[in-house]
Length: 420
Image (cartoon, rainbow, N blue to C red; front, side, top):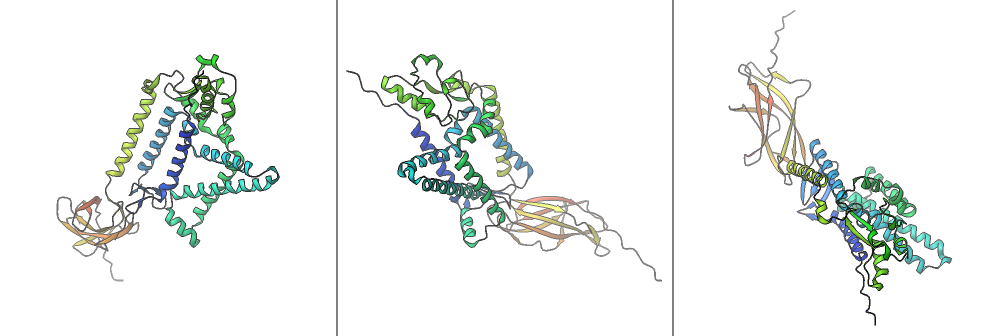
């Protein structure tokens, strides 16, 4: 009497659960707030990154470059380790294609061939609804969804947001309705890039050539593959590492009490976790950690307020009387913190006494991420004019939040005019 076959361990349920959890997280994150701030959102007009309940203005080109370089290195690191597992397990293109294929199958069973026109219309409506959801979800990472829906109901989304919604929704609809797997197989550049980055540590899905004699030539792996490839032919750039062929092979071999012939390996040589300790992977990983630490440092260690100084082009300095002169400035103060501030501008001779400032620089208010222009003049003695002045922004407790040094210019003397 033969023993009953054990149910094979399939990866499909794990893959689908991961896809749905990731999709749900992407949809929910824009709605989450911590202390009144978005969990993750980039406000383009103010160049402010809202992350984990903090407002982090990105007000320097170095920060933008560090953030971009960190994302590029992370992309390379993930590709080096996981290969195209992103494509098969996490890419929105794959998730939406899987969903639409499931819906198509349900519609085909629910509606007979005589209702093909109605079935086609329902399918295209579904594609349009998904395209609009994807486009709106993308916009929510730049416009808070609470503001988005309020502005939508009032008809004031703005041309920029409306244009982004229209373009993204149109592209996604065309993709879902007419392209789908063709994009992964022929058009997506990621598969071509991954084939150039693969090394001894890259996760790969492969047919075990040492057990080829056990293959039943049933082609179940080929029928299960959404990309239409035969994994038995070796490494192919169209493979998205989704493991459908792995599950199909395990189902065929399970009644024979044999393991499947397809498996995940770290690299083509299957050297195990030791393959991760290779120079290229370690170098990219170290570079990503260093750049990410530098970016986080620029955000965390930055001053809570910035003060940018400039001089008016028309008049830089002029005498007020025979004793004192005024040096004219304008400054842009910006609050980079998450709390409102009341500030005052002070001027002092480095290592000396305070100087008088003329202008509205006492107890002005700055909201979080707010900016204010200050037009003022620093009054200094004419005869013993100091070479420089130190300008300080102080809060209501008298704490200095930022210092800037500026040069003082000598005012031109009054010219006497003779009577005609």
